[in-house]
Length: 636
Image (cartoon, rainbow, N blue to C red):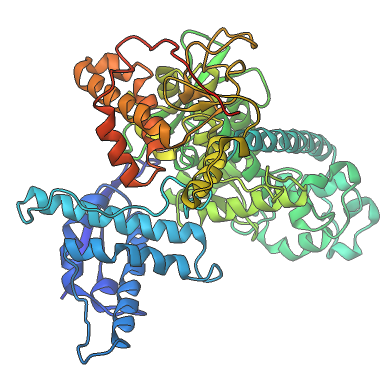
């Protein structure tokens, strides 16, 4: 049986369309696991719908992650074989009810795989990929009238527990500021070194002229750093680029002389001699380009694959309202027809515009040489490479780019991890800092969200979302609705553990009198609310607005459930009554997400009882923001 999926993808660089076909042979015939053609057939249409507009590599990655579910089914069969009885279990297909019953076992199986074999991120991706494909297949089955079920009860493991999630950990905002500062400092040194090296190169000459071998040349030739830098700048002695390929060995030997200390950057751990050390004085290699890329991802909030595909002719446009002061940074979206946009000042050297402009200028000699070779050889691939903003010199001294591939950002992240480790930069847990360029979008979104006073419209605009619904989905998916969410979750984890043991006592967690807000949440600092919880409160005055959803001074108990369920009921009612535009531009959607998140932490039997009791109390939230109605609970 031959099963395939196919698609058509438009290159965001060349704007050319390319068709692809991906055989599902591994799922049908097996490999390290048993093949399951019937199950593959069940998922075929879902895979086609999910990935027909993407790249072949994206579809292949999805199939590779799906293989872990096939391995799990083998494991399930093996476990059944050791049980008493003569029946042999063979799982060739999985219907929806069976999928729901074994899903938790799939989670446990992933969880028990040793970290050295499968890291946490890959476990999460395998779990998430299987979940999305099966849900897509179920939706198609419902649409075609093939099942009477209306809901498929499978999920991504620990979706709302960031401390134990298989997903990549959220990047704390304070850690982000620390990382930004050290990266910006290093970038400034990189730009200064390149400017110094180019000035030295202008005063040099070819050290290889008149010498048959570098070792026979006088010290005035190869021993002078100006001459060595001149050769790097003018000959480009790199594979595929060199203007004198016959002299490769001679040039390599000549670079054994050490660089002066003023051309070294200790933060990068640079070597003092060799072709790599000398070329990094004039061009951006993996380490330097990774730093620039990370800074741009933090300063724009754009997706890394959009940044990586920026081209010289359309990476920015002038801001018509602020000519000369601001520009709009552009990056192609996945559809290949439109662009992500991010506003940038043009003044500061740490602005995204200035960083990208410096990258373009520094790498211009490499780009010019690629264009020459393209014209000589009639090679369109080289011409396309020359049109990209993000190209650099790789470890083999060849040209590399950041176009999305499975290994692209792996090497970039390895360079950043090495940089932070070398400089002793640690996160809030005292562990070596790890930054992933996809987190830049989270950092930028949180920065705008907080600085704008939780303004949804400005945040949506900054993230390039066309609708507020897309923004709310993004914020809910990340579960990073406010910067201080970590403090909330840390406290709640302790409280819920003690609730399970029947040991809950508020005084064990907070000192002083405990007040209960109209939300049912207990406040330990009613006169010191978070800035956005009671705007205008100078401190020392009781909180009037009681915007607990933006505060971190609260904790929940069982008696909080009834008011919270009443609030959720009120908000859900308002969502049905209010015009869509009014609902989406209010704070109500975020409030609803946070209060539902709190309630989800409690056992379902308590929630069910609270939902029933909530119907007997009057509404707490109406179309106007509710005013303070405090209840004081004495703890003495």
